[in-house]
Image 1: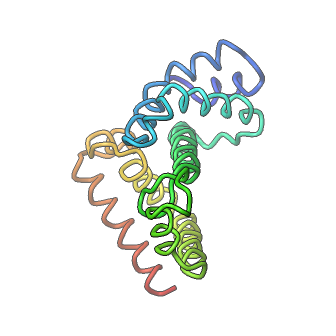
Image 2: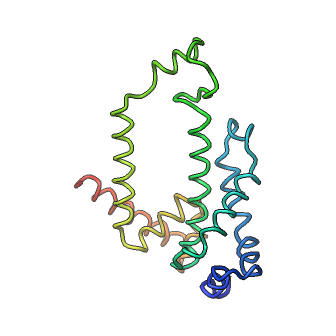
Length: 191
């Protein structure tokens, strides 16, 4: 996309044409992320279009405050919004073990689900580890964060990762990823 920063600046200022251009550019990526993340259970209650529209609605509301850090960061921001929406939908619909939240505790399945629920301390520990990982990812070099985001979060093939990072080959992208993960692993074990 030519001159992303200029386009984003126009969209942030309320230019409907710029917002439409951004929507057209990213609608397929957002829809793919929503489709792959819905899964069979959520797909019964939500549609890819519902999730996509919600993400783009949030985008329009939040654009004026969005800080331009380049096109890859903007793409990750949108795909993170998809992921977060799906997580919220899933948490709202299921208990541990995939049991639907609508089941009453008096039923055999409901009682088993309540009995098998994680201890509050385990839930807190899991959240602490997620926060720790997020902080460690944030402390990585920008190039390391970017290669991890493109490969893990966006699920791009190595050739596309190499193209986006302006690297010479898919192998170069793979090697950057290995170095980034090795650095992250060292930080985690030192932690």
